[in-house]
Image 1 (cartoon, rainbow, N blue to C red):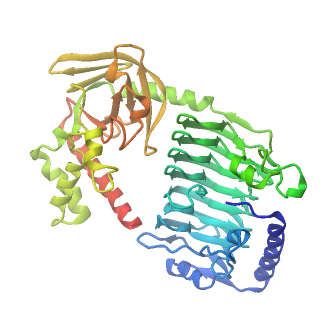
Image 2 (spheres, rainbow, N blue to C red):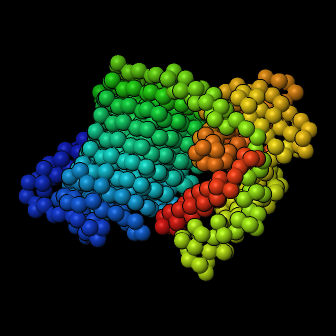
Image 3 (cartoon, rainbow, N blue to C red):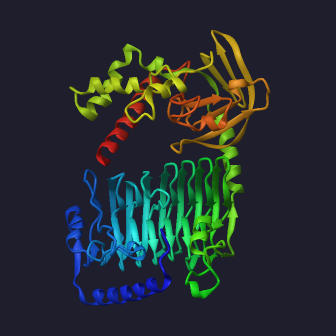
Length: 559
């Protein structure tokens, strides 16, 4: 967000706090027990509400509580939301859970359970199974918090997906708060995945773009996945500009994956700080007792400003040239009793990667030619009948088979399918002249009609994310003649857990991490034990159908 003059912000915060105190003391408390009553808050945005029951929003086309509209036309007024459209009351969840929130508005601003709150206080509830798609200021809980307090919120299984638009360079996406101005986020926990396209910014698992907003006692776990040219990526928040404090905050078991030319990436915050001169009203941010534990940053080429706790102070040449002091120098921040402990994650990852190679020992053939044989048609039909009924089941079953029965990949598939938005087929066969692959501990061997094609010993390199959607392990051989078998990327699947394997192999590790781009586009090998019995065949077909039918149903509800 563009910077608001501090004097105006202080006046507004004081006025808002006084108004909130007066309204809380005088207004009646309104009880909320149903989805309909929750939605009806939009009819009285200044009320004081308490939640008296858990609420399931499954199947609902949710309209956020409170909407963002600027209070005026000036630059400063653009950041102050109108009191007529924002939520300005109080909301006490009393420990209850709101589940299955779905918002799919890729061109909208300030989206979440609450779209925009101003001079408000919300908290003391759990949001479970939430998925929000938005263009700007997107969150599973509060899209934009202005001069407000968000306290005691727990987010479980959250996801926020950003979409490019005219304000992509501002961005602001977080699990609990997308954008915060002059606010407080305290005692919150978020387990969420935040996904950004190219050229977007300010994303964290707790908060996205936070200005003059403190974060206290918050814990985050999950992933932040960004395209190229993004900035402000953090385990807790993307930005912490001019926040007075980040205290007792932890990012644990977090993976931040960034494309090429991304900058300002931190285990706690992507960038933060203020200025020592009090006349600017932008305090030096103090990080106290914060910890980044098992935080993994996978940054592309030309990454800048990557730090264990904070990636960087804020500095932008265009802003410096246009505004002069203090923006002509990086913001300042202090670290007090903060720790970054990622050794455990690396050790745990190496141990898990070694164990995976032990768990998958055996010889595998391509999965789909086996399970799409006509004798297994009824096994495909049964879960489809249960999901969509007898009449539609045959078409659905054939669509599921077809989706993973492709025979082209790489540039040929890109030419045919583009970005996949209008449909695509995945090639799940073995490529490069191999019909069987044998895993024997660290040694992986490929054959064709009994003749050896390759055989190498592989060592674990590190974690690898397939386009931010699938997390796995990357192995590499030291053999110089390995060619297209230099790297193996393995998903953590085993015959004991998913009845099959999923993996990729090739000469370029970066290309192996791409989904619908590069030489391996639309290819992910699926392996099946060559000695599998009928029970395993039935199990893997049923699992494939149930998972994909459930995902399709979830996407339909979100739409």
